[in-house]
Image (cartoon, rainbow, N blue to C red; front, side):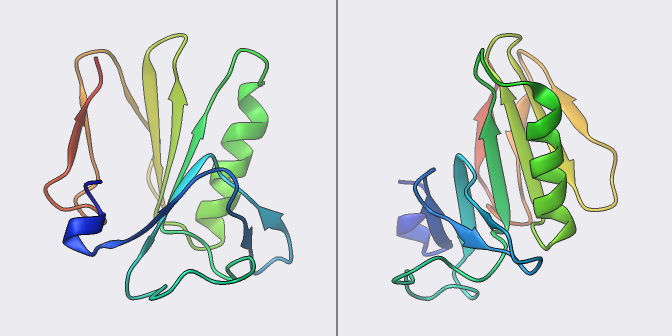
Length: 123
């Protein structure tokens, strides 16, 4: 609801898939693609990397495959990857050529390069 009125791009859920440049088809839990990269929703899988990928760790998921998935998205073109850890109330932010940043309870998540003015408190 925050992205649509500002016409920033498209947000998709886990049912959307992206055919990446390495030939793999991947679907993050949540993704965002800037408007200039995707004017209309494709009828099949988008053949681009989303600008933002989000994975939510559930109790049955091991963290290593989720981190590897986010890192692969970044390697193939995503600008930001986010891993949400509901059990320990953390959000880990991965960006191209930067060390991951772990946000804990009380920190706020911002992504000014993709979502200017948007902020999500982690509490």
